[in-house]
Amino acid sequence: MQKEKQVIVDGLTFVPYLTRDEIATQVDRVAEEIARDYEGKAPIFLCVLTGAFVFASDLIRAIGINDAKISFIRYKSYEGTSSTGSVKQIIGLTDDIEGKDVIIIEDIVDTGLTACRMIEDLKKQNPASVKFATLLYKPVSSQTGFVPDYFAFSIPPKFIIGYGLDLDGKARNIPDIYVIKED
Ligand code: IMP
Ligand code: MG
Image (tube, rainbow, N blue to C red):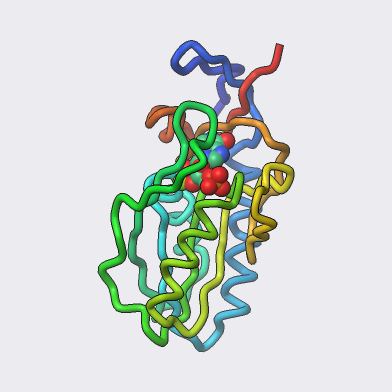
């Protein structure tokens, strides 16, 4: 399928950045790493809504650990194309994670504030371990020094949409990833 040359969302123009094939190759690589590290274990995946639902869906099916479970949490920190600097928990965890191996699945790590807040919240429930898998990681934007355990792509600090990532809730359903166009 031919991907669009550019897309316009809320008056902003975005250009192609990562194709669905490039994404699939790297998601499979991360899945292999996780499958190797968790062989013989029964981890619980925590998908961070809303953005990570597309990545989590592809990742967990590629990992192939039959004893794994999946659950969902929701945090919000972004408005428009930038971080508000404050992280809000919108949906909390309903499952018991005490003594469990937890793998957080996130769409993107930007300032690292959301990641640090989630890990702090989860550790209060005494899991056996907490690891962090993200599709995208913007190391230059980090305000926290947080480094994810697994990431599919390390990218420059530019605003992107597609494959679950949104602009104010829009564009999550675009199958490829697009980056904001700079004039
Ligand atoms: P952080 O707390 O600054 O690391 O931001 C993490 C959250 O901000 C992610 O879960 C996304 O929801 C959102 N976010 C960060 N960068 C982008 C982007 O380029 N596009 C869309 N959402 C983003
Ligand atoms: Mg998010």
